[in-house]
Length: 284
Image (cartoon, rainbow, N blue to C red; front, side, top):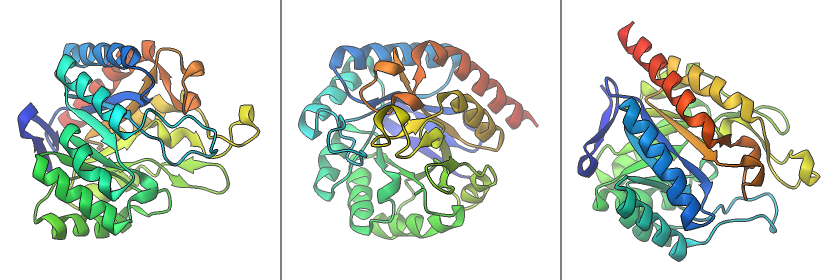
């Protein structure tokens, strides 16, 4: 049985637990938008009895173009996330990119996230793991687009050796499939769960078309937002313990990854569907 718990929030994720929802904005834009989206998602999850973690990035460091919007940065971004945490009384998930970000990020984020491109960076992973453990949080590690499901065993082993503890949640987000495309192997979810850790699905980034947004002459990532519900439902049916989703009130005006984001108005219907699928799988 793979179950992890955020003690301060009485929130558990894993076998036999309610479907965990990690959701919010792709990247922080302004505090009013952030609070508005967080408040709406919290209310929806509360109404459905689903545990909720608010997600937003303070810096999108792996942009296709140097001109792409990255976010407010570490200092301002963490202050915004701390405000959301305090005002909405919700746990926070955000990602980091550099070793010296580990301690300040872990001080605010309850789920510290390792980006997919960086999941094999040993110094970053171990620094984040130690800081997260010291702060009482959990580590949400996205599986790289270049890894098979069983390859993540080495990442889990690094974290266990660095901390002497189990604090890893793995996240499936698709694997590279030819040029400018990703696919999700639903069989991989069970293979990762067999490693003794909870597994989530990043249905948002799994529909990306890396470097293939026709609106930008291929200097930005495209996406197929219509595929997000399909992947989310399929992954929950395959045994995912949680779902990672990004929303925006007007995805076409989002400052980053708009083509992969769902409109906020779609959240209630989709989360209700996902809860039903999860309950059906548990009852089977």
